[in-house]
Amino acid sequence: MLPSGFWRVAPLTLALALTAAMPTMSIQEAYRTIPQRQTPYNAGISRIRGAEQTYLTTVFELTDVATAIRTDAMRWLQSGARRGADPITSEQALKGVEDQLNALTPPRKLSGVHRALQGALFAHRQTIASWQRATDADLRVNMNQPEIQQAHRQIERAYRKLLTLYANEPEYNQQAFHDTLAALDFLPLKTQTAAPRP
Image (cartoon, rainbow, N blue to C red; front, side):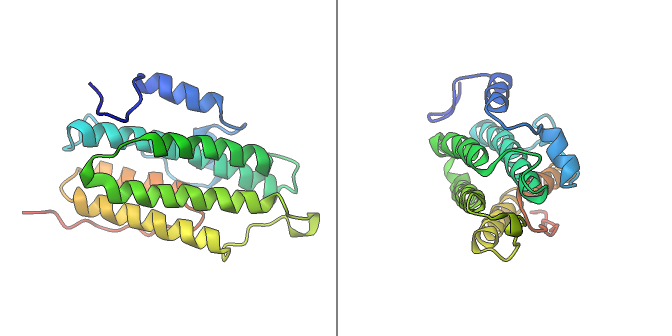
């Protein structure tokens, strides 16, 4: 049984529903475009159990969809509006993912991760919305844009919290934490090493 606040749909159904609402870029294509290694969280080897595992599995699916949306919007900007999804389409799609995240009730232990990801998606939406006002001469990504910096700080916060909470998680899944969140970020996310708990 899913905890209160989770969708009552199978993960595959959730992924299909989100993909249907997504712009033209697939998740796999987004990872290749960034480029970023794709390391899916593996619940089968995880030491995380119950509601926390269910929450993380769902959140990483949402994060991957958000990554594809923001990467497709960035492709639009960098191609001079010739390829990818325009900012209005992308901002609306990202709002849908943000709404799905906001509908979740995280386990108490993961509330800090949840708030950080909410902040990151909100900042990404603000970034993409600002591109609607871009002129032909200004079709580029400004990595110093305050919203990009804010999203980066929130993604870093989520990553650090995951490593602290799950220091004894298998190395593969710790890499998955990094790679999934690094793909969402416009800026490089430094790999950190969790100190295993005794």
